Image 1 (tube, one colour):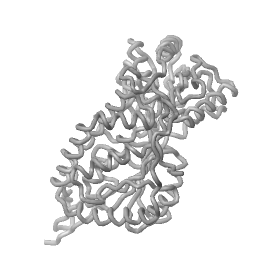
Image 2 (cartoon, one colour; image 1 turned 90 degrees about the vertical axis):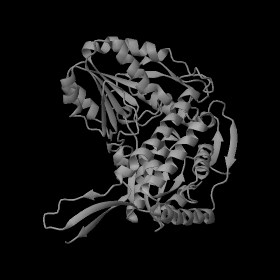
Image 3 (tube, one colour; image 1 turned 30 degrees about the vertical axis):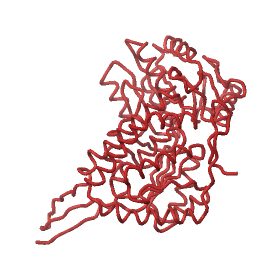
Image 4 (cartoon, one colour; image 1 turned 30 degrees about the horizontal axis):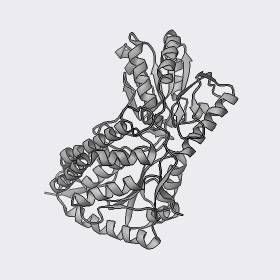
Length: 456
């Protein structure tokens, strides 16, 4: 039985199955991507930009079809699925519009005389290993800048997202990309290791779990391959003061609940100053308690099921273990029967000796901490193995910047719960990974910065 199949989490029905690639098919894919690299490398920046504009156009034209696919595959509410496609379109357009300038030669000041430039060139075929929670967005963050660089793409998607994986591959083909420029592979984990080891593959980018990141990095390191890893997060939402608490609660709900809380950079730990703690907790609990999981195909649904029965079971076990260790619920949510639906829950009383304190809760469960000072808020915010994102909420601009400067994270947002935009670099520190995606930094990861020196 293939591991690549569509199981609708809203119904539990297995909709479709797809065969895992044979070793021969993997070799054909690598050869095709390797050949396409030569073609892409020979294209001008303007030609690559035109290709990315066509890819963006097709995402826009097929928006409804693409959205329906991921709602069926992983339960994303249909209006959020459409919004994901919109963001993806903006990413491809951003690199089409800005990529040629990012690739321009950098002229160096040469003290010893003569002239020198640094020229950016693609490295070759790259392997992307992408997760299920944002099936199009995660791919675009990797594919768009690297196609612009002249790299070709081998894409191994999550086993539960075969139809969105094929839809992306078809978009590149229909956009007129050279054969092999973007190749989908339904690979096994063993085949992934073989792909990384292949000398025709220049690097690998993974978005996923710490365990997957460690395994990929180990293989890549053994074969001296460049890696970018975007891993887990337990982002702090630090609330120090608020004149308009209702507005802040709205940010908190959005930060915790979008995509059913299944985002690496979602707000997960709410660190609240004692002066506003009681009122915040009351309002936050009321707001989350009013959100009911419902059919994701309904345009009015905000919270659909989790991505799978296994995801719901895993989160339920984490919640039960937290309560067994002494944590309390300000909002007693949890799994709905034996389904993948999950009511929002809020944990309080979490202490450092509990396992949940250092865990990532990948779903609609929030932890809320009370602090008595700015210093204590910073200490708890940084007391985590993760360092992806964070947000600071205060009406005092100086305080916001002062706290932001002390947060150990790759991204800090002030008076917003975090988010994404094509021009903003995305990535973390500590156990949250290495490297950056998006913005001009997303084009700097998989390139050869070639020095060309001329004596005159």
